[in-house]
Length: 469
Image: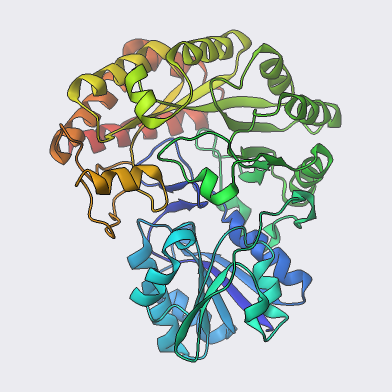
């Protein structure tokens, strides 16, 4: 195999990171992220001597005509598409068009959806030749260098009219062995911090999560044991981004960045001592943060931490199997305020047990925490999650139905609230949070440049327009 095109289809702006499959357009605190998973695959292919192109069609503003032109001009032997569960049906149109341009091109797709729905997807979409399962950074390179695909783990593919499911491949134990993403294959200026507009990229720092949250894909995607890259390896990637691409803003992507205190402190020490003067954000659980970690993180350039708070009642947290408590959230947010690190929180709404009372208690709790940013996400029934199975069992969701809407729109009712009621309550919640004079004043006080002022005003206007619909 000599040429491979790796593409985000022109089917909508999503974060397509398997665990995180988020529509961008209506979630104003979420900016486009580079297709790191495709860039990792491309890096592995380039090591095998394969010529690669990576195209993020939604970010480029390109549509199907540009895609068809690329297929004709580049003439790839394989096209690998990045899909999400909500956009799956639309994404498969890319496979159809590929076959129309050249039936001999192998159509392949990556996405968490295929970890549990590979066979059904291949049956439903005969234009799809192959899908990846599990951690796939090295899989395309193996496909490119062998004609016997039966020896390649973690793929489901067609051969002689049959669908063949190879054995799973194990999790990559040495994350340092993965080559750095092939960032030279994209225009990094398209990916930016939402507040300043400065270039920003993702760096995957660690994988795996032992917690049992019923809605989360992390255990399915990355396993229950945390695996971390060495601080030296991460620092090498940071230096590459700064020196080769002029990127000084980062989102450290992990299942829980702060899980291992010793590792967190050592990474922060090395970043601080490097003198690179970078700025970064990460996620954390409220029960894996403390004053030591916060001070080290801030000194190393961390300016914001995202917390999955999820709910405002202990009862709902128990239903969701979050494994964290309200008082821990209060303490974590207060510590961030004291140290001077901004916070973004995610509140998850619309679970089967949601009532108007639990909904409003979650909103009240979010107001009490008073973070710098908030997103109210509707829970989504991803295949392979306990929440999906529970929603099917309760009769709220057909077995093989995966809604096209996600996160910003309710996709199924709760046992007590209709879809229309959930949508109304979310708008009410956003108004309560964003239109507080204290919040507006606090936000404007933190602005450091005219461009930030413009971005915040734009964000506010877009939110008001959305709420008025």
